[in-house]
Image 1 (tube, rainbow, N blue to C red):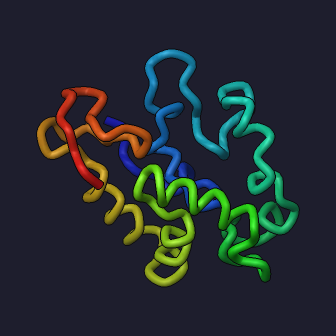
Image 2: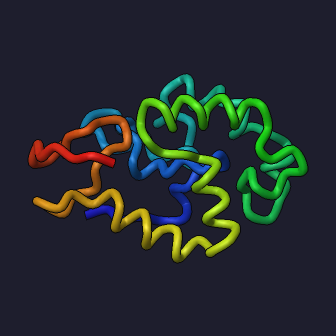
Amino acid sequence: MDKMRSELIAPCGMNCRLCMAFQRDKKNCGGCKSDDCTKPAYCISCILRSCFTIQNNSSGLCYECDKFPCRRLKQLDKRYSTKYHMSMIENLKNIKQNGMKEFLENEEARWTCTECGSIVSVHRNVCLVCKTQYIT
C-alpha cells in the first residue's frame, strides 16, 4: 500500500496522496511534483505550482512566501474547506509548525479507512476500496 510521503505534498499544501487523480486505477497522476505527462490539464497549468517564489525557496512550499497566503491559495483553500473539509492553508501551517514527519503521521491517521486500511480520497466520502462511508 502506498503511504504518505513528503514528495506528494504539493506547494499549496495539498496532499496528492489523497487526490482522486492519484488514486484512480487508469491514467493516475503521480502527484504535483511528478512529470507533467501524468497530470490532469488543470494541474499542469496551476499558478501555484509554477510560482517562481515557490520553485526557488528551500521547502518548495507556499508558507515560505512573503505573500502567504496569497489570493490564489485563499481561493483554493476556500473551495477545499467547503467541499472537502480539508484546508491547504492549515496543512501548510501544520507543516511549518510541527514539521513534515508529524504532518504525514497525522495525515495517515486521519485519512486511513478504519475498515480496510486503505488511504481514502479527499474528493469522496466513501473508501474507494471497500466502499465504507466516512466523515472527515
